Amino acid sequence: MPRSDSDPTQAPSDRVGPIEPVEDLQAFCRRVLERGDLESKLAPPLDASGRSLPDRPSGPMLDLERPARDPGLRMRGGAERLPRPGQLVDPAHRATCLARFAHHELMAVELFAWALLRWPDLPGPLRRGLVTALADEQRHCRLYLERLAEHGGDFERDDHSDYFWRHAAAIAASPHGARAFLAAMGLTLEQANLDFTLTYRDGFAAAGDAASAAVCQQVHDDEIGHVALAARWLGRIGEASSTTTHSPLDLYLECVPFPLGPARAKGRRFEVSPRRRAGLDATLIEHVRRARSSQERSRPGDGAGAAPIDPGASTTAELPEA
Ligand SMILES: [Fe+2]
Ligand SMILES: [Fe+2]
Image 1 (cartoon, helix red, strand yellow):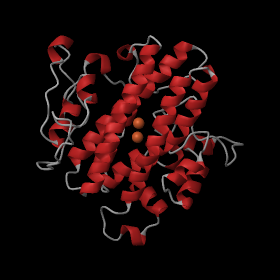
Image 2: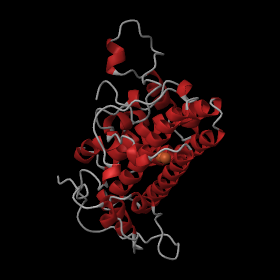
Image 3: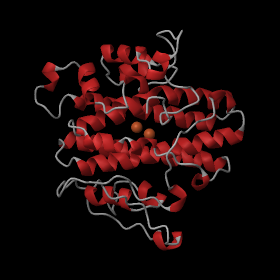
Image 4: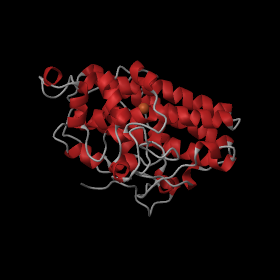
């Protein structure tokens, strides 16, 4: 598949033009993916009058490996480590976390746009739910960037791990289609974020940064809706019989693309309540709670309650079985 990174030979001022209004959702999603600048990616899905964009799904299925990114936003491979919550008393560590979290949100924006273009035939209510989630991710990104600016940080000088995008090829190759996307994004990465947002909310609060803690809380509250969207629709699309022949857990395990899976759908601090509020099935919650990564399984002496994910890592942390 072709890569679509911006032309590095162009000066940034040549690439960032005015943000043109778009006529429909498809043009909006293409702008998110094909423009490399941040403002184009964070412009809300509205027309010139501030109204919702019409959804006119048509054309061939999108075949895109990576979104366009201007030089300061380029993604890199490799592991991403975050400061631990206890280190947030240091403003430099807070700035690192805020930049990383903003980038997670930016990748989520792009991947929701990618999904909307890739699967044009999804039911209207699900597509509207994905647009709402995309707009939430744009807002979250801006909130983290505002907090980063308060710390004097520069988003374009931080590393940008491609962890979310690294899973796009497996999602695209999955025989489960959009169900693989819902299982990967909503029921793994976003489910894990239910834990991480509270861990870092409390870390920021303990460090005296109430404003950043409030952003984590807002992201957490919205994330419940995003997880609920995936849980609600996973069994409703694809094979007609899936809801009657599969439990929610079986369906998740069948559709989630490797190496994502239950061990990556949580943080060390496991929060049952938001999972219940998202409508996750009790058996699925318990399975995720008990799941252990392959590294933990090979580590002698680890009990069932051992942490599956390093608390210093984020939803985009590099985990051992990748
Ligand atoms: Fe978000
Ligand atoms: Fe989300």
